[in-house]
Amino acid sequence: MVFSITRGNFVTHSTKKLEDKYLKQTKLGEGAVGTVFLSKHKETNDIRAIKYIPKSSIKHPERLKNEVSTLVSCDHPHIIKIFEIIEDRKNLYLIMEQCKGGELFDYILNNKTIQEAEAAMLFRQIMLAINYLHSKNIVHRDLKPENLMFSDGKTLKLIDFGIAKALKPNETMSTRAGTPFYMSPEILKGFYNISTDIWSAGVILYIMLCGYPPFYAESDAEVFKKVLIGNFSFRGHEWRQVSNRAKDLIRNMLIVNTDLRFTASQVLEHPWLQNLNPSVPFPLSAPDATTFTTSNLLRRVFLFCIASHTSEESFPQAKEAFLSLDQDMTGCLSIFSLQENLALQFSNENPDDLKKFVLAMDLNNNGKVEYTEFIAGALENTMFSKQEKVVQAFSVFDKQGKGKIVPEDLQRLFEKPNKKNLPFYQKIFKEANCINNAGISLEEFFAIVTANGVGS
Ligand code: ADP
Image (cartoon, rainbow, N blue to C red; front, side, top):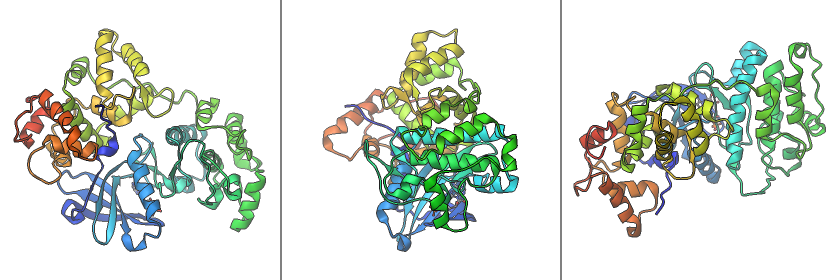
């Protein structure tokens, strides 16, 4: 049996009391559906942004379900991370990473325009997130500067998947959705596909460079008229400083005919967005990589869980290294290209050992290393001084608080429990020398992840 493991497996859904776990602090913002509060995890002191969604206000439960399932399925450095979902009688709480730096919207407003070099760096991040979504056939449908937030001074995250949709191959849509200035002509006509996001991204780029929208009018109806015609200009004085390359890219995005409009990968390949990917080395020494490679599957699954629940600021170099290695810009690394790149960095190492390391990272055996798989591989010896992180990961497996992890806990995370597949999980335990029926205690779990004991 092959088991599939993704970040989403570790996004827990529980009915615990939110106040027992998190300390509510300031209000961060308010949206159409919920209010977002800054909160502190009482045990780990992790700071989180928690979206409170009153159940009474949920008019479209299917939309919310869709928002949550889309977010849970995403694993990308430029897409907001969801860690946990808690539900009580009154509210649903989405526990997410905090974006400290505010909205791109306010950044543009405060600066009037963004200098071209910085705009290119930021816009590339936006397009990386879109290219990742589009490669999974997900359309966001509400791309705008209010839905792009700075997690730090220079990293943007795409938020608010309230009207995102996972499409079947060749599926088209007809619902009018989005925000007027950013809506594409085809959305207004009621027949569109994934390419609508490229139009909205083109509008964002235009605004970043000049500070006002390409299709502007006093009323929505007038805006829509202009969008449908699709004429815009670079006549304002702000455009005098802007390069022809940037204008050329906008022209290729704001094309009414979707057959002629660029795709996300064409945007990323445009000359204006080249040479913006700094080369960052993989943050692990060869001996640490060997420890990871020789670890049994159980330990690697535990590390993956820790990586899933850790804020990015704990591993800044790993994030940058992942982006630097993502040369085809799809948001996941092919085994082959990762192996080749590591061979360049670790030129003294045996290529077979590097191959084994990369294969060990690919936990779900799909021939690609996803973002969290990569982080788990780079975690070795970096953060286990933070014991609370390990306790937190332990509780993801030990959902009922029994104080031990048994094969059934692993099975529950990866599939609907059924007796037939249980031996598979028992085998994973056995291979990790955990054949004791009492299960894995917290101490043993700690010893396993720190590679100091059982099963390492
Ligand atoms: P809604 O889906 O209800 O429209 P949003 O997801 O857009 O809500 O969030 C509302 C506001 O809360 C955002 O505009 C932003 O200012 C703030 N916000 C949302 N997510 C975060 C986050 N992860 N970190 C910091 N602030 C956030």
